[in-house]
Image 1 (cartoon, rainbow, N blue to C red):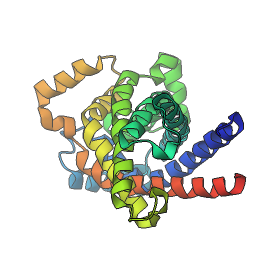
Image 2: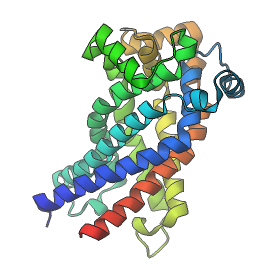
Image 3: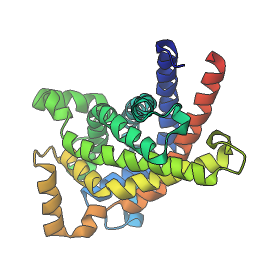
Image 4: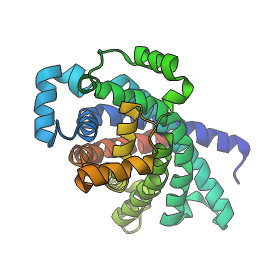
Length: 294
């Protein structure tokens, strides 16, 4: 029987495990994330991944170029994933109770997707401001602004635009995150179920299969949400107040549908290992913490 004490333990464990997974994911995927943002925001400057990589490396180097925005990226990913996984665990319990399922482990793949959809609402609120700062730092040179730190940029946004300035692109973030995380957790659980050997449970599939399941979840997420992510990146880098659907239509009409997928290649290349690393760190740290407190 689930008690408030055990629910509290579960939330804390999911929160910490999500944070550890996010940290691992950032260090694995940050360089390709930087290239993705540059290609989304300046598609004419960077029509392909190879050119974007070479110019970024030549002009800015590895640390200031490929790892630009790492601190806000860590903040964004830790904020998002700690809340996402804590909320996901809670939403799984709510969905299980609402549908009459006795255990979270017995939820259908679809029900896990619904839990991810609901959890993403809460993680979006934490993600939007931190990702806005990350995107602006990543595109700082191309935007023509002076190089600055995450703290200085945040202070500047607050001074010039107020708190609302940090939430530029929130609607686009909701539009991207909620259906995206339905697909994300659906793909993760579906792949885990497919890869589970006969006579074993999904929790016993091992390191390699966990990474594969996580990688498939990441690829599915980004393939589905990418047009919304392009719009979000442009809104956040430019500071524009254009409604999301208006900007998406404008990009489509003026630049073509390909521009709504500008930067997809580095995103797919990044998401498989980065999300695989995220789930590997999440699942293993979660098991370890449960073994200590149960």
